[in-house]
Length: 538
Image 1 (cartoon, rainbow, N blue to C red):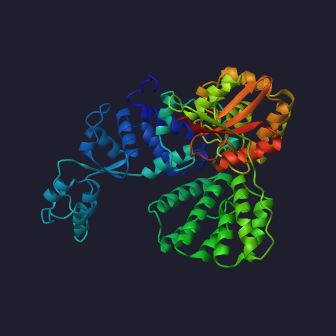
Image 2 (cartoon, rainbow, N blue to C red; image 1 turned 180 degrees about the vertical axis):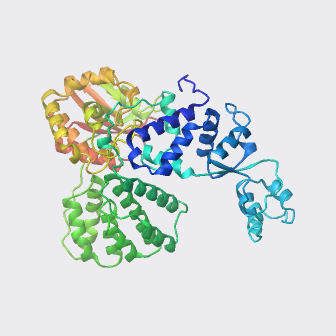
Image 3 (cartoon, rainbow, N blue to C red; image 1 turned 90 degrees about the vertical axis):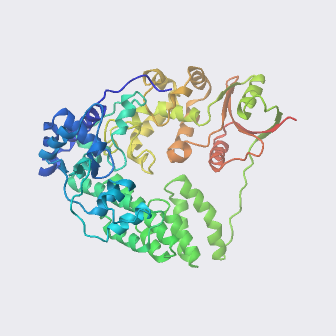
């Protein structure tokens, strides 16, 4: 249910000023003269002109009709458009090519009325194509003014400096304004700012453009892929920008594969370390019948995996390489989970709740929490470390998590803090951190979903699960926070100082890969768990 908070009519300008204040506080030294002048000119506008300009900046394209620029809080736009034109933010009624006018601003009936020599029987796209054959740039008689937005790239720059990417926009502020998201008050200082130099900013802007270009079609032609590669920026020292650069390289390489350009793809995968580059190299060498080249890669993936998924993929691919090289196969290990089978009436409750009620009849205190159980404990126990001031991971005050949370080096960049915290947990369990369930309630944390946080089960954890086991479970999560945040059993049950996880499977339901991943860890740690298979009672 949405909160009753209402936004002021000009909330979007207020939020844009928040963005500009952030830019002025942290990045003024990275702006050139034109960009500083743009800021100064914007701040000198009257409020209504500021509102109208921000409205236009947050819409798509550079061309607008004056009759489509009416907003209740602004009123008739002509006066404010004149001010914007006088200050160089827009141009009014400039000449433009007929096909551009038709494409950007005219409806089909208006197009036919304005250019009667174009056949009305054609589709609009065909009419525009026909117009492009004529050199018509004279302004036709229209019942609206044609408005061209100028220097919108400065707005994109300000958003890039605030968000660190080209995807987010001012709508992010609205979630906070409405009370839908409350963020942790983490440290933001110039010494750990996201962009260190202007070269970082220009690299980020270029990467955003290249990503936009890449995603314009489902499968880019080979010529486009080569052009994208040629435009890629050089390797940079900026941690997050290099990650984004490598991700784009992997995407382009995958498209080369789809075009059957295997060697082009291999050359690109060789330039990245980000998964799935090593996996793709192995698969390509197998497809090219050069399995001997894949053996050192698969060995590296098994010995030094970048994440758990890469390790699991390597385990699956290794037998194929061994077979191709006529090497002896490893003995396959099949894990058998502890199971129980129940026949129940499933017409009155979901299968999970039916098993919950059944276990409660056996004397267990049971909570249907799925991934929320261990994730919540992790989020509370490592709260301050998640939001610790690490270089370049917090861009602005509107982040639920650090940028590198799910990157392979999240733990290594915070190794000392994590080791010290694990020592505390082993000695004291969750007790020192339970107070955060009250003091931080409602604040966004990537591991904590507040509606599921209940004092009853937190107290049972405190009384039942010893610190050593908690340390072991959290150490598993820290191996790969993205993959190990899912796959946990449906139910957590407590009885007589013991606890047990229970994964519930209804008719036809099977264990998923991420669930088997956790169960393998439970086996190694000696954690009590079971898989409960339920059939419907006829």
